[in-house]
Amino acid sequence: MARKRVTLELISNESARKVTLKKRKAGLWKKLNELTTLCGVAACAIIFSTYDAQPDIWPSPIEAYNVLEKFKNLPAEIQGKYMMDQNSLLRRSIMQLNVRLAKQRTKNRELEMDLVMAESMAGENNCDLNNLEYLKELVHLLKEKIKFVTQKIEKISFALHE
Image (cartoon, rainbow, N blue to C red; front, side, top):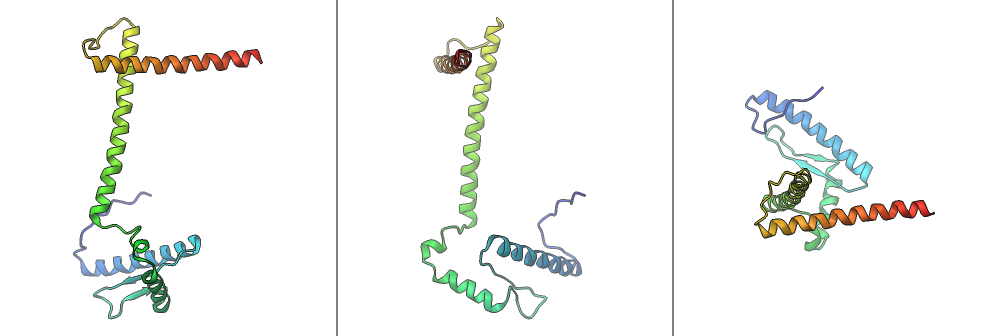
């Protein structure tokens, strides 16, 4: 059964908010327990809420203190190595998306050249023969296709001669 998408905003009904906090906290404790057991890492969590006088600490206050002390004793460059603020996360995401966009544009251009080549072979001449860059791309694509076909022929003839 699929779950419905949750909108991330403050739950207006206070009793529903308390119930959600309790359930999500239990889920978080479970995930942290799985993470530490399966991956062998040290982890802790501290949750402050207006509903409790004391913060909830996982796994225990002493163990959480030990994990935090280990972290504090690391050199600053190691402490901050994997930390990200919102700006750096957004910059990284934008950079990754730009890389994906560039790859997709290259793929689209290759498909466009394949289409032009197929149309030309079918006798349709819809390409711009006055655009030098366009023609250079077409020549490059043809060379790549010829190289690919030549390699295939060599493999087949080599296999036949064995």
